[in-house]
Image 1 (tube, one colour):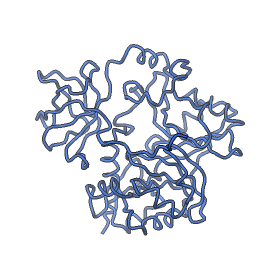
Image 2 (spheres, helix red, strand yellow):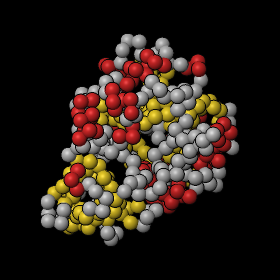
Image 3 (tube, one colour):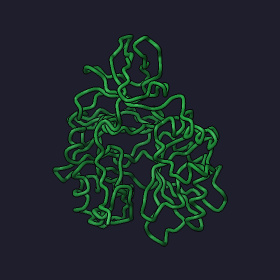
Image 4 (cartoon, helix red, strand yellow):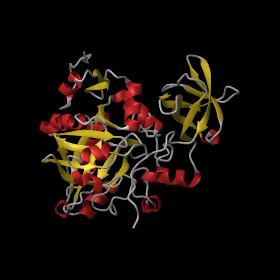
Length: 383
């Protein structure tokens, strides 16, 4: 039987009843009752996603539209809050970016999509983290010009299907999904139900994220689960998959004190924005790009089998403390523990020997390249 979370004061996603029916162990997460795992266990769920297709409920995330009179107006309004190039974002394309505070710290990381349809010119679709929804929406309402409005999407669920067989599974219900490349999106029908589907995700695998009507979410999830290639996946495997892929989790690896340079996510800053600035905290961030930063996010491979968790001290061999672990755990694909954290930049070189302190015991580790497991996003062949 499923173990229900204490649902008092917790929100429920449209798939809550299905999670319970499938035996999900429900826990509080970002204000929602969410499945941390199913009876098969985290290790099995993790490997199934790597080998086949895993179904994730990400309906706790915030969905919203930015709507202005034309693309240029809406994109420039968003560019005043993020360091990414939104003006030149092509129709049907998606981009990862971060909202910044005045000191250049990260308020949240989010996905932004420009619709393919010409009749949606001036609209941008955003997906933000559940724990930051209220903060993000307040910031946007305060900072957006009168010509651009924020319109929340509160009648839709968000379902992710991830893994090497995910797109083939979805294509049986929505054939147009096969035409998408990584970080592309479009409106299409899934068994006659209007959905917005992007080829993206949070596992390092190929796959999709589907914004679907809340009332149809369970039917769509069950249609996907009817395929033997698909199993339901909980938060536990979601975390181990994203850690193997070297992906940040807001509130752990990123926060309001951390800049994109410190967070090693400068790929979110395209050339024009790096040079022109014009975003919050630009002076700090441009200086860090030019001169480097005092601390930076790196990955670690640990010796032995014991994992290091968030908060573990990072020390040099002589006992000098050089940083803190922000995410850590066992990597099922590698059969070994891995971690991410921030260290003094002087000790960030790959191969640097360190000790991660767990319960007053020093675990030998070394700075390692990320992602730990090769990402397998689908890139369209270039003509």
